[in-house]
Image (cartoon, rainbow, N blue to C red; front, top):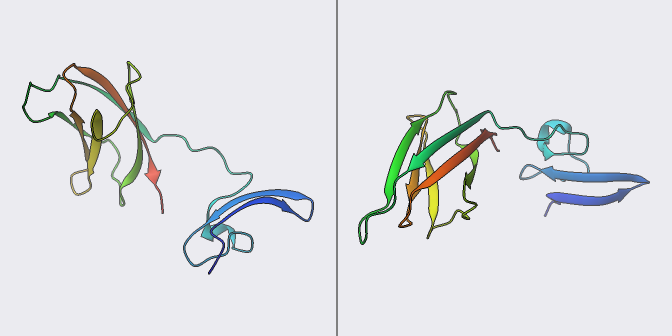
Length: 125
């Protein structure tokens, strides 16, 4: 079994590393690490914002579809934020990425409208 995550002191140097499956986090080459010390922070490739209507009483969730500007070969990593700080989840609001169409569908399960921002990061392997 390999160490996929390593956080600690390595001969006097602080290390924070996460490796791809099958590679030891402490000894893996840079191309096999998804996170390592000295990396630039993740920055979104796109940020999209949409107003999503309130869910009708007893009805299905309200939805909005947004096309992305970038063509994603793999599903991207998406972080959601509502303008009123409602926490995303299966009982509030969520998003689904549709890879063949490069679009995001936002779902609102609440009885009030939401303004939702989706921060889209490159593919995470």
